[in-house]
Length: 338
Image 1 (cartoon, rainbow, N blue to C red):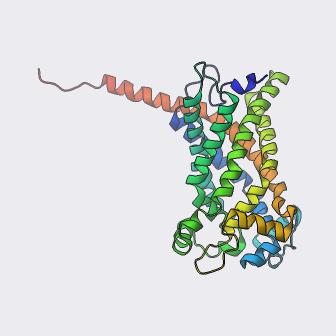
Image 2: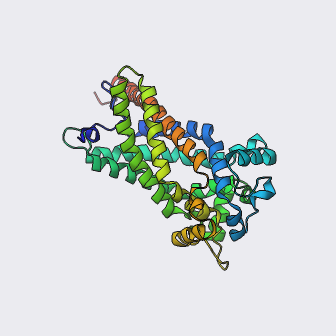
Image 3: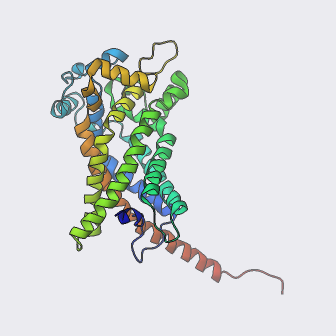
């Protein structure tokens, strides 16, 4: 029985809710992106730090983690303790500015494209098939990931202590990377990013819809906020496990500076996969999986919960402003010749 897959998309579709127009989708998505980034950035910093293994540091010429007071191939606790010892609490929020910028625009673009594609692919009864749901989720995430790949590169380099000192800010980093590494540097890791985000979003959206329906069935009187959070947590957790290797490859490619005239050991996805496996085995593809798991679970749950609670507010806000503007125009006398 696939009736769950033909439910309406969870985008301000509650009975009596105002239509979620494009500005409302974008603003609600941006709001959820900012809030989740500020809350969960420490988990992302720990994840990136764990993925800079001692073998990777030697390969690309980065300062090994031990120099930061972090043992080689350390776990979550040792990595967190080393970051605090080296940078203090502020170190846990490295890369927040490009991350906020990326997530504000990225989540906004994601929800806008999600709604646009959903509107195009809905059947005459206003519902999406399971196949269309998968396609919409993957396409929306791929679009936002491609547009914002340069910010993702900058964010990853800011989170790595070894490279953060080379840039004075987001604009300076963009200019230097473009000058020294060209478009290849700005869009490094794009393919593994899409290979990570498209399946993640597609799987997440399907699991989210199914989990939300299940929770509604089990707890019919639960608040919408609690249901959205629980469904988002389950969807985010399962989708994260299946996309962890792509995340490691993406991080390694973005931290490997692609300068002309120097041997590039992470130039392609195939090279990156082969080198990670050769130097670290299968375990290398799952470095940083635990902080990423909790970040994705909490982030997915918070993103959808905040989005669904705020999209109605923004839709009403924009509608009331439109009505007020039309009312003023209707009462404004027009000039003419008598």
